[in-house]
Length: 101
Image (cartoon, rainbow, N blue to C red; front, side):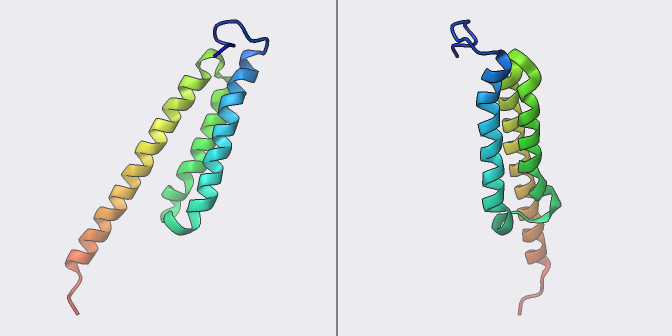
């Protein structure tokens, strides 16, 4: 915040990195904890690592870095929810057509 209003004595890149790099580390940590038990298929496995890479790349967008990282995170949530909904719908259809034992 202070860098945005000109009060801090750090570069835009340093201020951006102070937000985006911990965010990317958080995404990778969540992925490492959830991937084995909750992610099914390559698409679900790649959502968080891809988002982490995109957030790191946002670091170099200057004054737009934090906003761009927020957009990436919003799209990540939407993508994850969409993939989960598709998997759930596919499982429901499979269970509905399976013969009763």
